[in-house]
Image 1: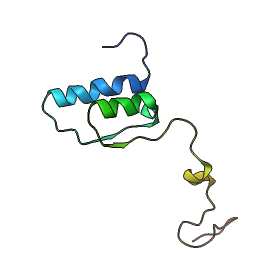
Image 2 (image 1 turned 180 degrees about the vertical axis):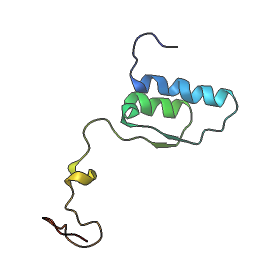
Image 3 (image 1 turned 120 degrees about the vertical axis):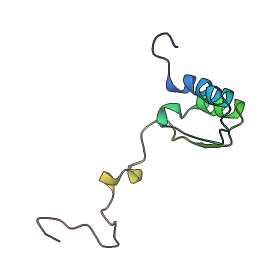
Image 4 (image 1 turned 135 degrees about the vertical axis):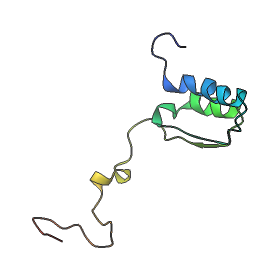
Length: 85
């Protein structure tokens, strides 16, 4: 139980520890970008987690967001206008 609204990363070590305390072998942690800071990194290290997949905090680079891509998904340029496939 937490008072107020703690930052996500502050809850990560307790969540991993709770899982380990009940006997789970936690080898990997996947989390959203709310956990992607130094506090989250420290929580992984303290709990012995070597495989953490956590995006870093901040805005995603424009090339990582599909709505900003060039539309070249299938090897062909994006179609403009009202074409029907």
